[in-house]
Figure 1: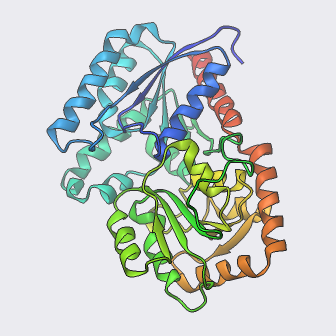
Figure 2: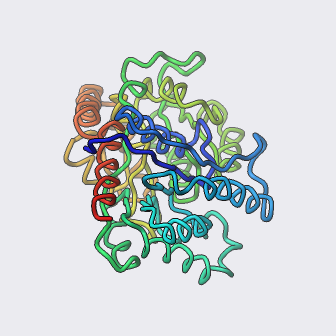
Figure 3: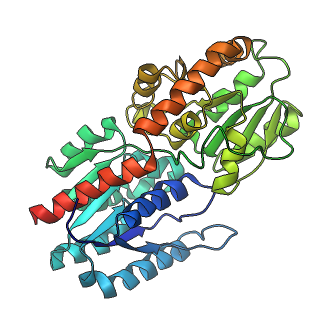
Length: 367
């Protein structure tokens, strides 16, 4: 590690809100760097509790945050950017001032257009804005192996490093207290609700005869698929429950007491580009997972024998795997134990933060 503490600016134009995946992925890494003695100043877009404004209001906030950073940019050893098309002004200014920029990529360009289909009309420009940032980055952190090869092609250089997501193994632990009001036994899905999370398939699985009788499915989180979850609560009372978005610590109080946790991602356009927080956090809680057999997930589950894999999009296979967990508690307990061991040994946020710190230091040395 560096012989002197560094001063880093962390830029996230995506809101960092407690209870969302971004919160853990950003704050846990920052906590790890601060534990090294680094100073990390946060430049985060901030929106009302009612949600981010549309269009010009959102752009104005992104401009405000970057304007504040621009005034201080020379004071930093490096800038760490959670990759975003609209971070281009910061990337260009940093390049002009010879301040190293490390980009963290959490998904391909397509993610933006899945979330905001209307933006597809401007895709050539938006893709070019992000591509410029990757090409001029001092280094890029890719959270999934599938992203690494794609990023090297897009960036035109080899300064791309695969460092996945992780879990806070103290918060997400088998010893987490139980949240009041939970069913005696239940399965859980938690995190954000974009289309690629496989929520539709999961809701289909609950309706099948193979789904274990008397096992409710509890959802925690928020996002685009929320209306579908809320409709299922009405359609299947008692079988589907929705707790809404919970603070970070309280999510663990649900997950740690589930019979099984689901990681049912499905998206052909990003099939090799997953590193889901819910996988590592479920493992850290000692809860077996039922997960899609896709790159970025399958190798972890297979290596550590911490769950059951199923073909992405196969509702019947989800129901059958869930029944297997319920019907063989000894096997389920062993899978959960393996997952906990792996999370502590390999996938803690402290370890992930240290890996990212080395990337930043290498970028500084290269400069």
